[in-house]
Image (cartoon, rainbow, N blue to C red; front, side, top):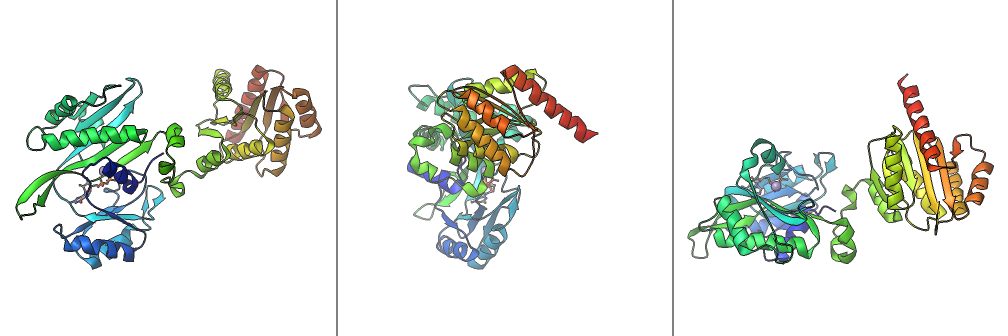
Length: 399
Ligand code: GDP
Ligand code: MN
């Protein structure tokens, strides 16, 4: 789950990281009111930033400076309602503008192949890291945190030296790197990214100029499987920016992942779903999704799963593969028949149900008298039929 910048910054602040003060506004008038105290402060101007879950907001015109209340209101008015990569901006972050001297990149990611948390840094900040990785990979430096000891000071110092931050900012950088690691662990995040981590020019209390390191942007993604133990993070979920199909799947307790093929799959059990997808591939077909309706699948869940599958316009055939254990075959069959009665789009379906009440399931499906609903005795048969239908349908459409 991706967090909005204003939520991500809250997590950084909780670990003591240096983040400039900020407010969130949903209207231009509120943005103006939020900007006024910052405009009276030493910064003298504010930065107004679109809060959307896509990157590259700066380039898209979603990050702007304003030096007066009127300008803040006007700029916020421009950004609110703006479309950034298909997402409508509904909120802006308002913060005192930073006087940036230079920009760095710093992130913590879960490196699955190394089985460790990796800290990545680059002096090429402000630019998207994928771009740096493609054009100047030698500019990206990294260290791996120890699985038990965490990120050690010497590792953070090593990274600092590689980024050219070995001088006046060394101690601050070490504290930030360690705070980033703590943010990652405390929240079960799989990514915590600051881009830019900036050297900012400010006025000290006595009026003299000084430079500090500040986290000017923050991107955090939380491991979905860990959300159960973070109800406070679940509250930060932004449903308006999620794919409606994903939202519906989660509400129904269905594991659903959309893929590129045209055979919709409805299976109970993650392992069986993986196997079904493998067999489709082996038979020359392409699955349209991974879908695990879970244990004890009831008729309403089957109907919900059918809806998720049919929401994908590429689906040309549906393969239902149910192993009746706790789930009862007759329940599933009833659900299928009912769902087909309700569905608007007509897609051929191949059903294989074995195990508990499989015989009753076969009777229910036969009684439905649906010519486009075939049943199969074995999984191999079912897969063959589904692939034949899907490829036949594809050829038909192309002709
Ligand atoms: P992103 O484009 O979505 O990553 O949004 P960022 O928050 O990273 O902002 C993009 C760029 O805007 C940064 O790299 C900075 O160059 C600039 N920027 C962001 N905040 C400030 C600020 O407070 N002051 C100034 N002068 N520039 C800023
Ligand atoms: Mn950024």
